[in-house]
Length: 80
Ligand SMILES: [Zn+2]
Image 1 (cartoon, rainbow, N blue to C red):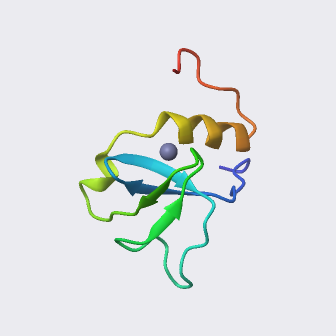
Image 2: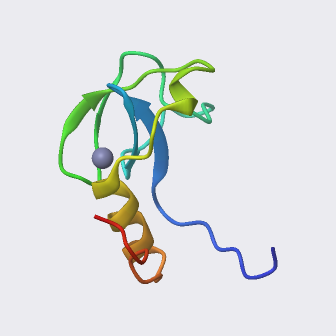
């Protein structure tokens, strides 16, 4: 993991998909609390969810592409 660099966004399960957001999380919190509004990388405003099931939701394709671009990675081959 020596090449790992944190990127200024966080994953947030919301409304049936796992989105990414650059919004600040409340201090002391490693997640976005349930019900908080976050602006996502796919340019939606969504309500965050927490819990085991929420993390199993599929990754939002728009956020995935935006997150990879921010991380300096090419878009995934075959991604739509
Ligand atoms: Zn998204």
